[in-house]
Figure 1: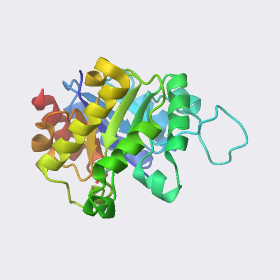
Figure 2: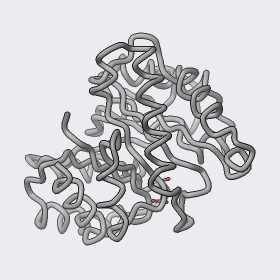
Figure 3: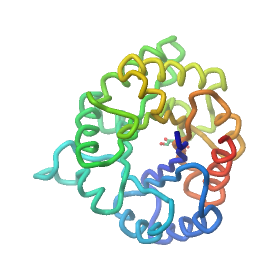
Figure 4: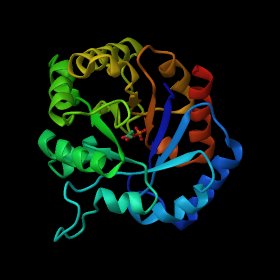
Length: 248
Ligand code: 13P
């Protein structure tokens, strides 16, 4: 399986930020891992121009479950694809929390994304309170099974484990804690999908940075990262891409 370094720019970046993408591509023209950036939607097509002819893939940060219609402010999977996206992040904890997205809604969006030919990066993760209560695996298992559409395969979905309390905080779970959750995700996916589950990329996200990337990528069942803040700077994201490439 090809590992995946994915950057989520969240609500950051303007035209001026495209110079970071050019710098990233100059420093890492042919990484051993797959490289993906998910900018805010207005930047997608211009970033696609910068990425044209390179190995950099682009993704959206959310999509609507419908193809088109009277949904002011929303964006369909087809629109993302039209703008140059091959992937879309779905069910990020910021959308689950701020926009009250349920597992059902995330599943509907994932179906729409896959029907359009996009790869759905489905995010799961526990809050600090849930972890402290010992409910981490219950929460993640329910999110995973509730958000994953029937018929999903390693070609159509990527799963990102992002503990809510590790996002943007500089804190991360211990390495054994990350490994435990990723093993759990692999086993749940295997029950659901069979042998193809071994090929599903499982990303870790939450305060990944150049200084901790290598040790996280050395863990079993960690097939890449979903990176927020550190994906905004070419030097930092490039170092994470290099660490993942070295992890083989
Ligand atoms: P940070 O890397 O900034 O903690 O964000 C992680 C994240 O939410 C990626 O989707």
